[in-house]
Length: 171
Ligand SMILES: [Zn+2]
Image (cartoon, rainbow, N blue to C red; front, side, top):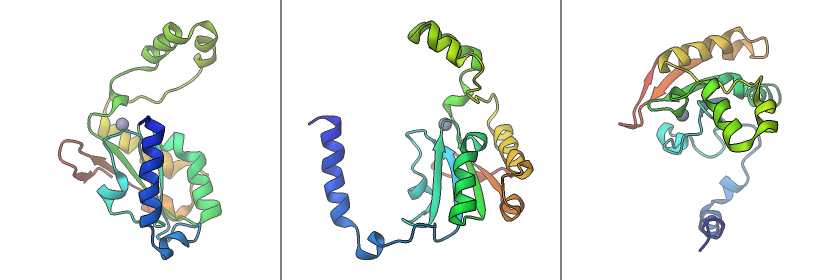
């Protein structure tokens, strides 16, 4: 079976496992919070943090970047009523392993001149130190005029340890 066939087949059993209440959940997250975390394949935020269907927005991107997540967070807060943000980065994150210059060199080599030109001014938001990056993202959210006051007051930052499955609070 192909990758896509496998996904579709897994979805058949998932959809038949959903209860009526799960199928009729309202659009706004019931617990009014958003989690910003990394796209890393080893993270399962819903399981790791006990997030049930309909509870929260889980916004994922490379590195769990608050800056990258701001568009989604604004929609989450202004249109869908979330009031709390939790930032969760993790140990052994890929974002600790390269610089903007590194990825731009890879882009130029793999994709050629047009792509190199296109990525010239881009910031891929890598970070050299994990806990500093958590603190910086929390500070970014606290100082953004696009983040609501309640979220500014309550924003917290965590590190998830891929080695243990545990989270520890940084901010
Ligand atoms: Zn990561």
